[in-house]
Image (cartoon, rainbow, N blue to C red):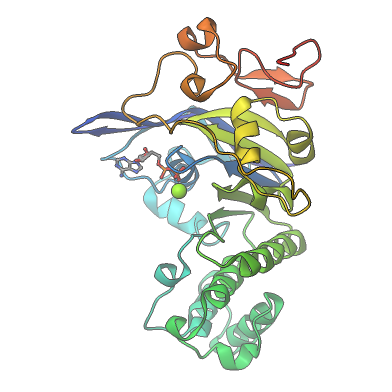
Length: 329
Ligand SMILES: Nc1ncnc2c1ncn2[C@@H]1O[C@H](COP(=O)(O)OP(=O)(O)O)[C@@H](O)[C@H]1O
Ligand SMILES: [Mg+2]
């Protein structure tokens, strides 16, 4: 399948008064046509900085960014000018953020904001654009779309606003949509609706999706491939089913135990012990070792490389779990 995004060796640092924050350390990311890739990890691990770097939205200063390869749809966009990037953003690369209220213009009706996408990117007339907007709003399940198109953002609920953003993001059929915590601010039931809507729209439009979330439970229903990130580094990458069936990194297991499951009433809700390291003071060796029950002297000393396992999985661990011949019983 055609590759939509190829990112190699992304490094982003923020020099601050308290020390240097290595927000992203040598991250590689591959996204193919129609694929949903999830980037998962606790708050502060570098997910947003990674996804915004893909869109070249990280300002420097304050950030210092280095990347070996940034290819979008076969084009090297690493050195594109701000004007060239503007052409791509919103048209070929869409984005949705956590907070729909701040993403929408408060003094313009929702419909008008979507109309603009069609007018600007597809050259439609005002009237044609409105017909498309109403259809798009219908598609994302907004009740009474023609009437709602005339509502201002504050007149809609959070879930409805997120639907408006979805309609807007898909309006120009982007090749890649980046959704950063798109459901985090919503109630659980609305979350599920918006997620399935996102998945349907993504499939229907043939868009590739980069879903950024701290919540592993969100991922199982929608992602094809999952990247788990910890303290600026990718620690595990796997197809979603395999990740859930046999997580290899102890951190992934920790994230899973933190997900309460409905089917699993006996399960105790456990938390990963300890806390995420301060971004200016990451530990020696494997960054996860102070919180890892399997840590050995080697883990304290040496950062494990990202190793390929079974051709389609990767794990950054000296003693990965659930791999034949390795037992932690
Ligand atoms: N503008 C900035 N200045 C300084 N540090 C920043 C800035 N933006 C992000 N960071 C730091 O980069 C790290 C990664 O942040 P972020 O990507 O937002 O995390 P996530 O999205 O995973 O919660 C954090 O330690 C954060 O404090
Ligand atoms: Mg974030």
